Length: 383
Ligand SMILES: *Cc1c(COP(=O)(O)O)cnc(C)c1O
Image (cartoon, rainbow, N blue to C red):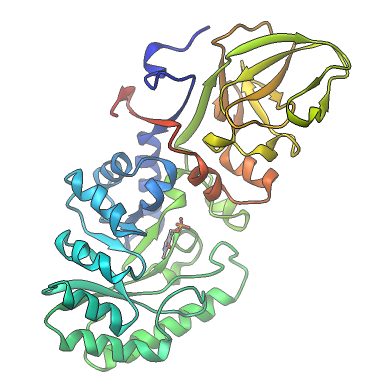
């Protein structure tokens, strides 16, 4: 069995499929969960490895009201693709990026007067800014006691307008932890002082995916959802709220070499796996340079061949890994699913993450540029 020609447009025996229908479905699930709050889709880091431009178009079509990115360059890629939706850059950027933020009509996050000065120096006029308040994540943001003064400074300047006030939760994916409620209380206090001073805070928001799913109080005007859009759970603590989500990304390859090995033979760098019985080994041309972690061998990772879980044998190398396919009678070209479903079996990004002691986010963000992404919707290849 060889894959169809359209499965191999990269000219390489390895690729990722991104199911835009799944992403549209997940937008619907999140919008329903967060309603009446709007959904802003977080498409930073190339849409968590899913391809930012295609994902942005799909989420906007499906009803997302805006987009969020980490970097001005990420927003520039969207604007270059003629995506004119509102785009929020989630943290302060180097002063050198201010001119692009202004030119591209982005919404800039600020938590310092220095950032306001940089925007003014870049020629901003009524450029939209949102104030980020640190309520306990302790990553970025102004102190709660500084937010009012910053909002007043924004009001005083013609270069900027206050478009929103937001914060970020540290343990939203652990719903039993009272820390989120404390952060939200503090955020409410800050909003109270801003409103009491006669300033409209604009768009108010606090929720990431886990916040949107598990913390009604965090939903405010909009939720900033990333990981759940891609059908990946934010954490075990909110798994029970994620059953309706569909994973969008699957990672595929074709077997590039098949051989018989004998009991006692060893395999791959370090010869760390010894076969105890005669078996068939399939070589799959993906490795850690593609984002398939080397440690998937020692953590007992698998891939799917003909719907069967086949163990990775020997350490994953830069460009290739090996599977023990047992008694399967396969040839070069046989399809392999590394992440995704095959028959009744499924391997999820979360399964890799659990083995490796990380989170699904890191797995999908870690797939490298060398893996081409193929976007599919309604059996139509869109890119
Ligand atoms: C990345 C990010 C998000 C999205 O988080 P998910 O857990 O992927 O939904 C939301 N807000 C901020 C500030 C972020 O940095």
